[in-house]
Picture 1 (cartoon, one colour):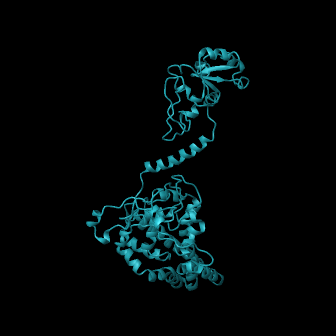
Picture 2 (tube, rainbow, N blue to C red):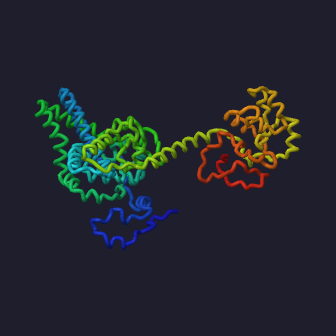
Picture 3 (spheres, rainbow, N blue to C red):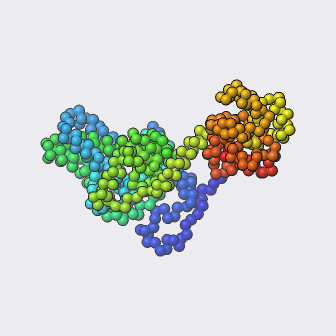
Length: 476
């Protein structure tokens, strides 16, 4: 049974040369931090109907629930002008990209460097998304990546779609999020400025600015507030939250299926390019979410364009060789699953070793032929043989290796695979010299093998070679 106690405490001497403000938040965590913390820190009581009013986070409930109500009422009484509609879409992307390219890829993952003007712009428009300050948001997101799918993950996908989408914000957290280091954020002057003035910046960028633009621009004061302010905010909210929910539920896992993140075009469309989430969780420091030119990732295109005009630099990309290894690993895993669903020839060790004399004797009673050291029973294939029954009949009781491997006909892969399924024994003395490769049917020459599966196809109980453990019974 694992211990509740930490397995290791970092050496105290490491702290002696570090100022308190420079000490990482995770400097003192033990090696078994997740297990240790989950056992040591007890969660708050579960939420029930009897205590739900006391357990709601009323500030978040207001921020999340009031805008949709105001927006729905406002839409009923406010006509939508085309200029306002266009501006609302533009402002949606400005505030949304500030979340994806700013809060997420720049400050949470440091996947590129931004110039001061770009940082200010992202901080301002990001405040207009009304999702908290950069410091608060990035700290939670770093905890999400470090403790994905555990109870230290603030929006643990295993707790359900609704919880990971919005539920985690509506209620008081049942336990503290896992520790995450944000020293770099506390030293950033722009982040400190935004955090200090967040309330004012949020109200101005979310509601005042869009109202002013539409009002002063074309006289649509109410439309600017309703559509570019409130309705736009609702869409930005659910776009961002879909990264925590939809991106962990819909799609495939082409890089790693250990955790819940998935890749899907629909999620990418809904989240301004954050839908290739399986890639992102594998390579979070990469400024891209989508690695193919045809995949939808406007956030990637935005960052790249900022580099082109000199406002961004040092765009990080993970080595393509390692990305391909991740893809190959999952492809091999899927092939392995298909492979295990097929029926394969009997393992050498499961076949009896038969002397030549015994083979000749048994061949008089049933149609047996030798090919590459294996004895095959072809009784159910005599009439089905494409070359005619007589071709097989004349090889009964003989070694037909030469004829089968091109002497008479260069048989197809399918013929090799089918013949292997008809093995009933191993000829004593093993295979003739030079025929080892012929003994392996094509379907088994590239079979997927785990690291601990080292069985050899050339061993038999009478060959004088030792058979190593081979749990999967793989040959080749």
